[in-house]
Image: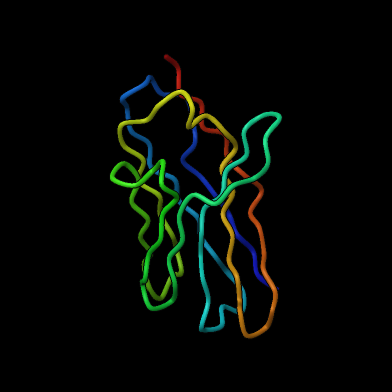
Length: 117
């Protein structure tokens, strides 16, 4: 079993910054992909950024150049540094870990990010 605990959400003005953290515990196998997703009210959950166990990163187009995903070994903690925040970034942000060989993934409980204009 894997547990994901997120922290770091909050309220910030447009143009500001926040850093989200997600600590994974339990049986963390490799290869794996850790990522951040977000879900705004009335919208589907969408991928924001991912980082593999080999530290390969990927970003959704609207956050490129503003958000940076990183992870620390062996604690398996992933961070999402969010700069130049916009009101449209307002959402609940969820941490995810995917094990492609096991065909399983796990989710955190979510953390609210609110960007005021």
